[in-house]
Length: 137
Image 1 (cartoon, rainbow, N blue to C red):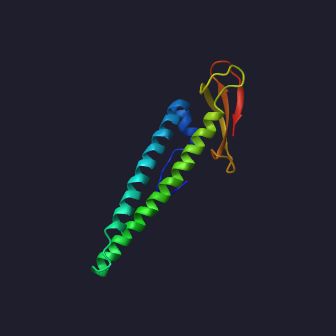
Image 2: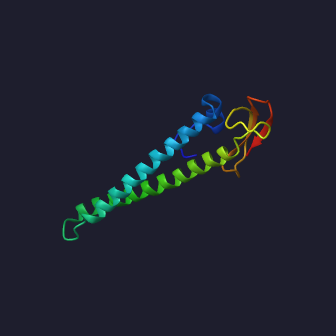
Image 3: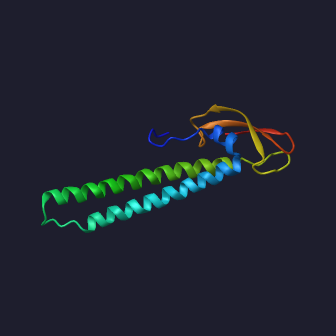
């Protein structure tokens, strides 16, 4: 978790919004990250394109700074996009009740930290339809 990107924990977000809404929000966040990354990549390319090595050192440093900032933002957003999408897809693949095959119709009954997993936590869930319980890790 990055300190500049405040987020609610996965289990709290699913409890508050439900799995389907949480999943939709993750996809929306991923789309926003891709757009931001693409725009920062364009910013970097434009800054590199307009560099004139015969101009002042101040202008050269400014354009190189803009290019580096654009590249850094692009790398950050791409990395975050991959994490957000991997976590959402990982949980979505396990959101089907093993008893009645209902998709995304569950309540989170418990959670624990699981740093080695894609979601960063392990969820114990109960199906709203049949009452079956399973773990999503």
